[in-house]
Length: 383
Image (cartoon, rainbow, N blue to C red; front, side, top):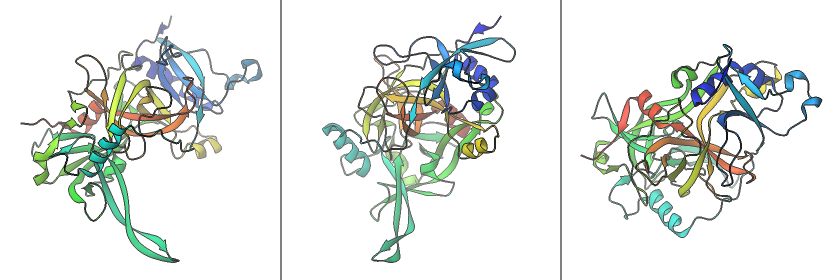
């Protein structure tokens, strides 16, 4: 007799063994591992489950057998079973009007973006970016000009194998590729080159990321990059975030529990400053570039997941916005775990996940301990 799945790893195996069934459901907008329902404070509660996000619900009597999501799913060996929770979901590309930043956040963001003399060091959370020559239409003529992209420094790190290699973590889509130059404050003629990208990871097969779970054609979005800084900047790097304080030791996401679901978190980024959220799901299925074509050709798509999904703490707030890419995500607790880093922010999307708040700007994060292991890095500590 199957036992109830009570951990993220067990839930992941249940989902892996039912991937074909779940992928066949028309309108499926992704799945995730979490808990059923939300409590009065809009935090996830209830039994561990497989969440299936759908644009609407249809009574099972009106559906064909292959379009009905079973109330319970089991592993192929019959060892574990988990209930499903079908959540009516709206995913939109419409840009939400972000709420205005508080005066304190406006001041913080200005400091992080420009490092304008209020700090004598480079903190985690500071702006970093790159520039490139692009053509723009000026008075009807295409002329070369400086394009730009900015993100956020997540954590200051050091190579475990070569302690002389010191730099910072950000996203792959900020660090771009090995040999790419990164600048502070970010992009224009006043910018300083702070370092050069040494190593990046964008996507990793799930069996190399989630020990013990191997789903066919499944991958995890890792989106991380290690930027080696120039020697003169090394003494100026700090794993200290303005208004937050020192970053603690990395928090281990334990796949053999459900502990991270409902955890309160915070982040500081160059666009929105200090913001607060709640981890509402793990292993959310995000859309891959080829999924639509796969479905049109009646092929089962490769599944692409992200580690943690974060919703804003309160209605009407946001957790991140464009430019916050690469920010460090920290626990926000009243105990010794406060300020312990748990993830690296890489993106998000306006989505309604059934919390009763309507469309929210959700944020996606990557397991920091896994990044450090893959890139063979450790957090930099001051001597």
